[in-house]
Image 1 (cartoon, rainbow, N blue to C red):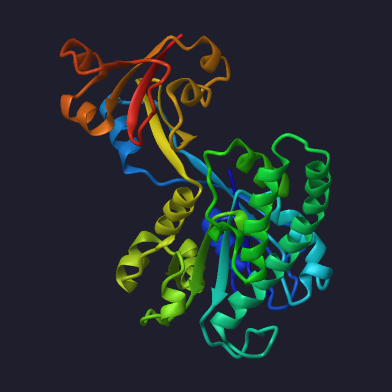
Image 2 (image 1 turned 30 degrees about the vertical axis):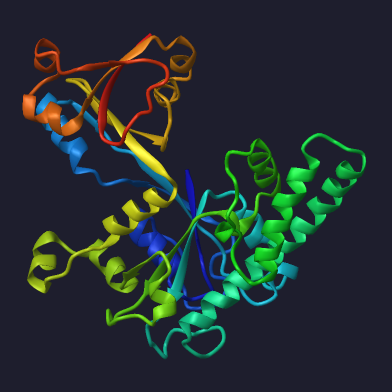
Length: 347
């Protein structure tokens, strides 16, 4: 799963990426410092996994991961190719969710591309360009679906209704992900997948601020987290003793967990002496699909699964004791895996 980090130039995107991934990247103070996207793998913090590994005395601990992509800065006119607009839009189509970094901090030494700090306006610039790009996509697909409707192609009328709803939302200046769709309709999935809209992706706003005072109401309502990204970068170089002395603590774990959540992901675990591992699956996945995260054959060869919630297993003390006590549930193909379950698949 990939999460794209976007925003205007010089708002802290690459600095955030550096702090998240601990990878050295160019964070110079000039527009379009990032051209080709930087890509990094980040571990998802999970105390449940560490406790299970300790219980099992595992030799190896493997956490869940999320891939972050630092994408080139966007400017007005990106939807028609201004700046690095075409490259930006192509890169963002490849990610599953979007983190939009918004500048709140004041610093005369760091250039703002429009020479003023106005977070709401910055968000509107970014979102307007994404919306304009999506409108072009919708109009192109609409032409094809209207032709299908004229020749009475199956599902074309429903697809056109879906396109109408999305187009009206975009034309009102709203993100496509605010459109209420009937997800039970098979055609909904078909058309939204074909459209591959930028603003249909889930959004998380990172407010880059050194002042954690209350936000204006219009910004507070967004799904967001506040970070002092410069401090997060400096914390990379500090020793634990220095962090304690300066009373500084990173908030990046909160960001990673929020990012994981907006992808609609959950975690299940396997644990034993050789390895304890966190596995990532989509919420509401049936047991055979969850098993395919371990190996693709598991979905086809699935027979049943032994399952227990992680805390219950921890309280009992071992997998073998949980089996002796009859605490392991046997579940079949239709069982929907829940977050935090420890599973052994039978194939």
